[in-house]
Length: 78
Figure 1 (cartoon, one colour):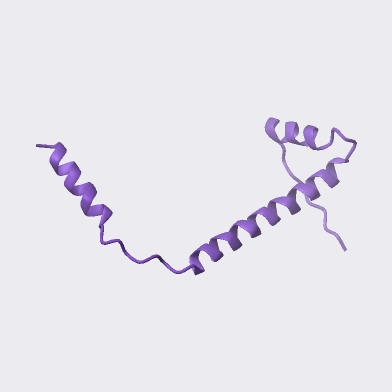
Figure 2: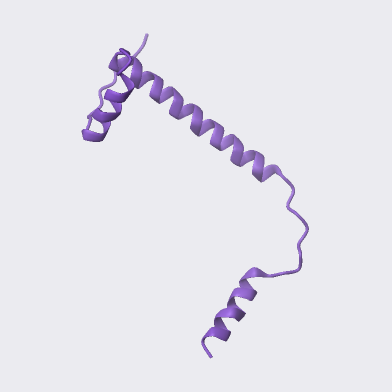
């Protein structure tokens, strides 16, 4: 059985609902669709992050970026 939820809207939310219901979609369906789409985007982003983190790291090029930045900053202060 489906549960009923209640949301408190503000001006931005009301505008978004107006946009989502312009084609005749009722508010309940528009909200349901928006929640499902948001969850799908979040799941895709998490999977993209996991896929990126599974990739092997490239070989070091021997440059320590932090040291380079520190040297440049030290040179600017002279």
